[in-house]
Length: 188
Ligand code: 5GP
Picture (cartoon, helix red, strand yellow):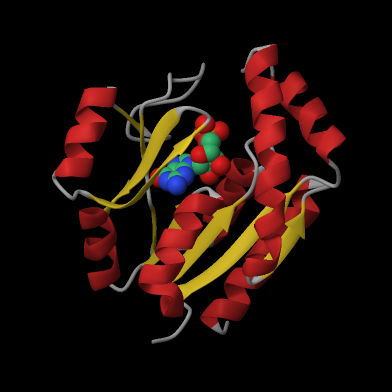
């Protein structure tokens, strides 16, 4: 099995993953972005079935019981999970599947589908810079930002397990690097 079936991207909340993926998706075709399911509150500007499937805790726990997730994790006290069926469908159509999931999810998907995955960890140049970006983004309260920063320090320990590490200092440069990784994995 070749490593060009799944592109998995992780990195602390606020490191710029979503913007980098938005840029990538302007340049590529024949991909499926895995829209995760979450119990966290919708942020301003987020849309159902575009950013996430937003569900209640009861619904999420039922989906766990029913075996609907390829992987799921509790991140910042909320559930996040990847539904299995759409992934299987996209892979059967020969599409590149793109995941944006945390390190816990990475570990599980890596165990289950490691030979199909190219993995990329995105970080800010420093933790202080991450904190500044979260404050600037203005979407989380002070306490949540502190939790996310603490969490990020733990996540950084996993960088060495990924195939690539991109330091997002400048969005355009980081996006170009991600596009190059895509081209390398697809042998373009
Ligand atoms: P946010 O709340 O900022 O959208 O996401 C918080 C964290 O949850 C990010 O690190 C993101 O990559 C991760 N995440 C999003 N969806 C999933 C998922 O389906 N599974 C796992 N394990 N993590 C996810």
